Length: 405
Ligand SMILES: *Cc1c(COP(=O)(O)O)cnc(C)c1O
Image (cartoon, rainbow, N blue to C red):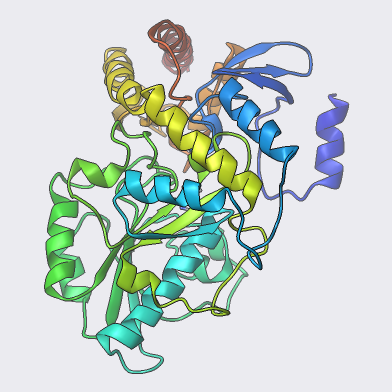
């Protein structure tokens, strides 16, 4: 019995089902448990640790700012926010940014902006604005956001839900066109669905979506909280197909593996819907988060993490496909963001993760059938090789068990 695990189970809410490992330290792509065992992190906290654990430049930026000024509130201007948001607008190509903390808050900000824009600019009658989303989406856990989730597990017992949302199958342009009405203010989507199991839409879909949204004066809002900042081999996943969306949501890696930093970015006419007092967050845009966010963007650029993601992601995908395991029905993804679909008749994705853990590789299943590989973008080819070896051993062991059964 591990007393740390027992204690966490005793005092912490059971809203997660963690693998039985107690993480005590992290450095780069590595994690150590409380007994000193070392693991390769193939999960990077759902992309929040794209820079690697305790990146020296991130630690330096964090500690330097922490000893100078952490929290000022936006009741005043602070000297770190403008440089951060200037850089953020410049790398995204968006006009204006609104800083928040967690991803869900930035999504909520997007929903509010879209509705106001719908009323004030598009002229939708009061209370009638509709937002279309993709089925299978993951945008966070607030009551409004789960209202348009298609996952019963996220919703059961949490109603009544917020009205004003419609969903269409992910990647289905015909269904989207059919769902648009004069009251539609926005289409909100992930360019690639992360929590759904790293699901890619048909090629060309986002480009068609952009054209359709323009035709009907509907805002295209992409949620790149997980796919953004290099994860898919482009700085933003939308760049695989379009110049820029009308609004963009970022989080996770924006905090450089240090702390929650998120942002809603948009065209000026959309952001102008926010007036003093209409929206806010006590911690949003705090000096510590702004300094960390700025350094996170600089490190991404200067260490060419996006380029690494493109190159090493293609390599990892090839190597996983090359395993040709009968247990695996598909290996898909873009950049260092890969889902390995396990045939549920042959093995459980969780079993694969547990066995990988025993071999020093940490990942986490999603939706019971997918093992995800999303390491820090600083990973090397040799480290990928060692992870693939562990995957090969686990898959052949499980194939043996299945054969004997
Ligand atoms: C993680 C995630 C969110 C929610 O972010 P939190 O920081 O957990 O609130 C929203 N959208 C996407 C695409 C995500 O992956």
